[in-house]
Image (cartoon, rainbow, N blue to C red; front, top):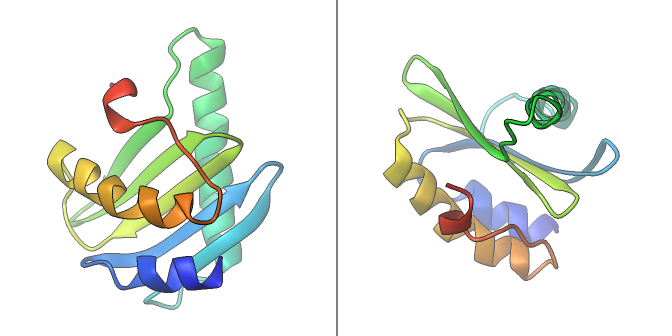
Length: 121
């Protein structure tokens, strides 16, 4: 998994990323900043709680993006995993699609699979 996250770290605009395996275990991570894996895990698990709450309210979601000025956190849940990416750019649908076109094949080599993006809309 280390090599996969070394590759993810090289993606344009990537500040940090983490993959959380249920329950609450960091499976892989990278950071081009001082963000620790524990801080990333905490943020990811908070997002998992939000996904769970929306499912309980019969409004399920497994993909989210949160803007922080010109930076964005993108979160995706599926297959027993939660992936979080912190990007140095504003994010729209095209950026999210591009991100997972890059990340999905890298993680698939490690046996991690998410639903295809077109099925998540």
